[in-house]
Image (cartoon, chains in turn purple, red):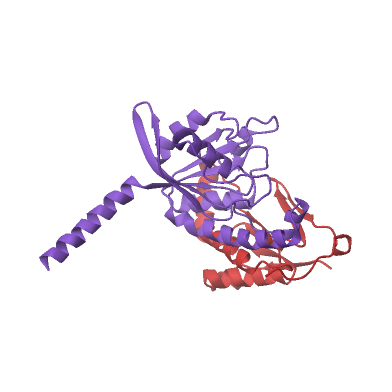
Length: 210
Length: 133
């Protein structure tokens, strides 16, 4: 009995500390905002490897992808987290759109089916996140219901949030517009592709996930 | 013919979250554009996206959704008045628009107007096979 109690206490203590060490940092946003490109940039910078495949065809990421134990260092501080790249959240998925992007009919239908499951999983995982980076395409209208629903749900769960306006290296990007849409949050203009402001992003990660 | 169906808040008030979502989604699946008085909670907005994804097939491609909240006064008497109205009316304030993606291509909002962009009529679209399960 005593041995059982000891083992139970050990398990609980281990779980508590393990949970504290394994901060889950989620990347959320609509499709094609650059979540996987950003995940790859972070993984390349700190692990020297990619996390997933990025492409111009929407819903390339259709499953939750996790890279564990990423440690970033800044000014003698360290932050270790598990990076969770989620499928883009959408309210509609039309396989004909994938056909227009050059996929065959069967590939498109398969992709559409997998994408719907991906959206469901991404929403389910909202409860699991300790902190979230919302990745928006800086060149697009931020006033979409998907963006508002993602941010609103994170706010309702008291999850720390950083919003990034990705693709800010492009001339038509408008970081200010995204800041105006979400005035309650810090919005950082970055480019996951070129690395613009990526150091500022790492500093901000200490604030939301540290 | 395009049907706009107005749903007063009292019609969903007594329903559970799941019941509200089902009712709204079923109307959208009947190819109606739903104008709901009031708004869903943030959690219900996420749930309606999940429920939509579960039902997508070759005929039903999803929804376009927008929730219009009352303008947010930041200070002074306006903020006080708004707080009081919000306390009295709760989720009855604002409006929610839900349309099937086969009919509504995009909903754009502006502080003063809402624009519904419709999809091309089906006769102009390329024919395709029915199911993709």
